[in-house]
Image (cartoon, rainbow, N blue to C red; front, side, top):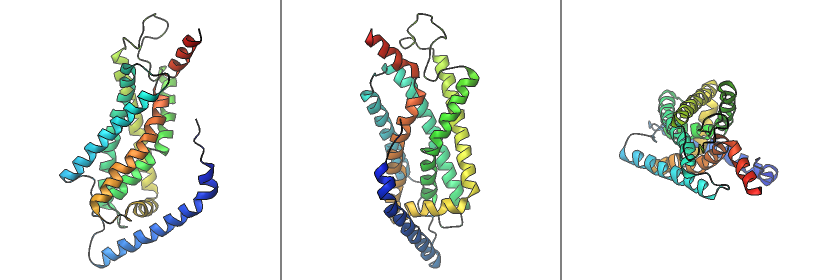
Length: 259
């Protein structure tokens, strides 16, 4: 289902572009001022103290509540067991991506020479993952379905066995699909890293403009690791759930209702 935002595209782009341009100038000025006084602008760390661990715990709780809320309002609603198996892919995948994003943020921040910090790099990582990365994951998932002959979200025997697979799922198929999804997310992350390595200066400017307007390091950490992931993960999880779940299940349910 396309997401249409005509008002934003036709009327709202000018102030957004103006804001980004001014924010970029302010970010460069702040980084320059810090260097002039002998200070390092790389002060925000995604991992390093108890506050960082607490922030990540809050993020995990928000993610779980988001997934449960989506399941509660979906129509037709999957059985909770099926929903849990489908959602476990996203939980495992999101956990793996979260760790990879922190490692990338720490690594890029250590080698950056343009005034960025770990929070800035983490912000860029998650923004790309939850937009362009979703498209990459969708394409790779459909490719694996064609190559291996399976349907994502279907955990039963192939063909008409007469067994209600939702009530009695095959956990081996579920585990195999989780492994496939982890490989998909890993490939997606590799593509994102290559994109960032291809134009590091551009991504540094974007990351600094988007995060360095927040002076306080803990406030910036909350913005980067709670506010941004909450908003973007809601979008990501809803979209990914639409193609990770069994597509023919809703059609079959509607057919039974008509009969």
